Image 1 (cartoon, helix red, strand yellow):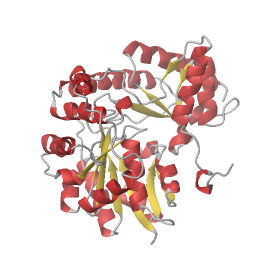
Image 2 (cartoon, rainbow, N blue to C red):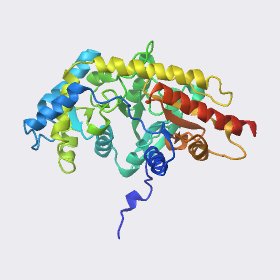
Image 3 (cartoon, one colour):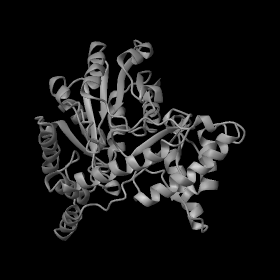
Image 4 (cartoon, rainbow, N blue to C red):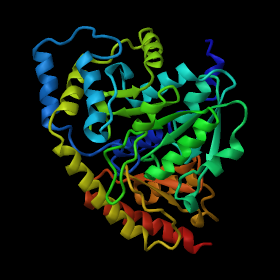
Length: 395
């Protein structure tokens, strides 16, 4: 069998691998709590599901325009008007099969072999492999817990070369929950513009920012310089629509046309029913956003109160998303030496699945999702704490 060389460096997603192992243990009768996968525990809101059912009843089951039905592209533009008072045209948008698909399309359309892409770490684990698939070179820019897991222009500059063409920014961040302020984002965008570096702003979690922090979107900068910025978004996280697979990209019309042409040779349009569901989400009541955001903030605070009592842990307070990225390398020593080993120990002894920080570019840390019920989260953290305490005492 002949396998292409480009796949030789691609490894399976560790988040999905951990969750798969957890499901295997469950099948064997072991009671496992998974804090590994970034998926809201809320059901998709009823009005969204009702719109999908209506689409089926109306036999809205044919091919659609490759870039998405016109009313959905208009609704994406309307979303930015509603929440950011920013005017963009439907032609600035394309609908893809989830945010990951939108990211894949964007990187394939903008990265040439040999191009260097700056990726602040910790990063969402699919960024480097997707750059590699396009023939580009991922260049990791470390930002540790001491920096609040955020980069500055001064931190980026030593990694910039004449081959640097793209910077990927993620705010709110998966895995750290870090949120860039408006001033911090402006400084990064100023730096990128000064050095002719394209910026992709991944804003997948934009509705999950906790007061007093505020979401700073790059949309206003995009309007001023559409040839230098693109924005990634989607329905999965904020609207609890993970399985519907609806993402979108905002970009220059010429870039959108090129991506649409490429998408026409891969997926073509995304699921017609999912498009109608997404349309209902973007044009319908938004009460669900407040309800979920309030619950995630409460769970964040619950988790931080417990972690504050762990002398072996460092965890900057996240302002968004629903993750904690916890530095636990103080527990490394006799039994465990890295994040993968400590996650294995937690799965075996605490029956809790979390993800090694190595998958996100920081082997000192682990990522856990607090998108679970309050009591489930509390019990999981208490069980983890007992394992950590034993490991820490051995040092």
